[in-house]
Structure formats: C-alpha cells, structure tokens
Image (cartoon, rainbow, N blue to C red):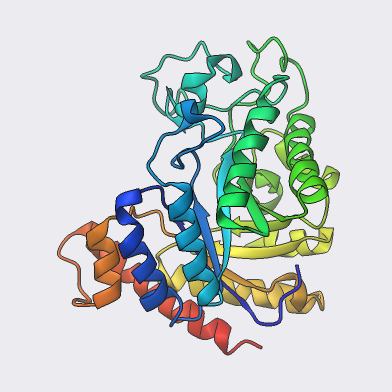
Length: 344
C-alpha cells in the first residue's frame, strides 16, 4: 500500500437508491472537508446485481455506484467496496439473500431459521463448496466495475461457523487451513487476476489467548494460525471499539509483514487511545509506513435524517441514545482526522 499522506478512512453500510442524493451531499459537505481520503462502502447484497439478480437484497444500482464513485473521485477520495465473505451471511439463524437463493452453500443448514445467539451468531457459506467461489467472484466483479474500484474489502470478520461437524465437506478439517483457503482464493481473484488491492478485517487472525482479547476481537478456536499462510500485501483493518489496556495485534501484524490500519467506532476516548498506541507500536519497530492511518467505522445505521444531522450540525447533544452515538461519532471523526492530518 503506497500512500503519500495519512490514510483517513470512513466506513458505512450503504445500499439504498433513495438515499444516494443525501449520501453524495454527505461526502461533499462532511467527509471531504474533514480530509477523508478513503471511503469503505459496505454494499454486500444490497446492490442490484445484473449477473445474479436472485441474490439482490437492496436497491443500489450501477448508475448510483457510478455517481457515488464520481463524487468520491472529484473530492480525492478512494472508494473501496466491501462485500462480506465467508461469514456474516445473515443474522442469527436467518440467512441472507445468497443463502436463500443457494441454500446448498450454507455451512450449517440444520440450524433453525429463528435461532439466536448464543446458538448461532450468523451463518457462513461453506468454504469447500465447489460452486460458491464462481458466484462470489462474479458479484465482486460487478462491484469493482460499477465503482471503478482499484481496491476491494472482503470482510472476513466474526467467522464462527466453519469446519462444522455436520458439514460433509468440512468436517474434521483444520479451521485455520479452511480460513486461509478462502483468503487465498479471494487474493488470487482480486489481486492476481483483477489487479486490485485487497483489504480484510483482522480479528480472526488475532490469537485471543496470547493477546488477551475476547472472542469478538480475536479468535478462540484456531483460525488465527492462518496469519502465517496468507499473502503479506493484504491490508489488514484491525478493529477495536472499546478502550483496552493494550492492542498487541497492531504490532503483531506489523512484525508479520502486513500493513495494518486500526479501526475505531464512535467512542472518542477509545479511538484516540487506539491511534496513539498503534503509532507507538509502529514507531518501536521503525515501521511507521506499515501503519499508515486509521479507519472510523459507523455501525449506527444511516437514513436521510442521519445524513442531514451530520451535514447541518444543528445540535451537539442527542435527545436519545441513537442520536447521542451519532453526535459522538461526529466528534470522533473530527478528532481522528485532525490528529492524522498533523501526523506526517
């Protein structure tokens, strides 16, 4: 990853044709003025796919993508589509549109549709199904072409349904081997064949026991060993949303040879602490270029009112918990982009 200035990245889920205009205004009036230069746009199945209309689960069109991409380009923002791979194929036992259209891809088809955590967090597709990659690659290609993207984020966070004992293809196989297989399959298609840069979340590559993380920010059953079996030019986004005593995974990714971008959410103090600690670890290794910036994520949900709140800044104190989170997210975005602007 070659950068001439600090990466100031922002993430949001987006898949609505009706919200394209306020979203473009949000990019021009909020993200660009704050110096955001990378936009991670999580589309998943919310795009209107022409190659596979049966998996379309949203209303964002190819023309919408072109308009958003043009606004980003005009404002010096690198747009990176995100498509959740392997895990996050729905919520709880409820499958997403891919597994509804292709139930044979489901790693755990026996789990009831109404199952909830802790019985299941969310479904995965089977990494050993012989037909799943062809479908997924065609969906990725559509997003890359629609957004004229030179990079792609494959997700891969919070994968828990893998090597299931009831899967005829995966039963008994090593979870790290299966996880690495998916990463390497994606890399071959995206980097080798399409020539785009590949990004992914880092949590499944973090050894929870060694690093003191919980089961969300790290792996507790074996996928972390895949870290030594995937290409080092994949950019890792390592998320930590609460303030912790330490974040040893940042230094570990750098030591392993990866470029790592720490990712925060709306809590300002936690975000600043993560950024400062990440900078310190990179500096200790003399590898500041391996920690080029930070990503601010937004999992708050976006609608017309949310975009207008950011654009107009009519209030700084929310009247309910959701608005208070949005207000703190705005403060975090403001603080982090300013700190990054003064970094180099």
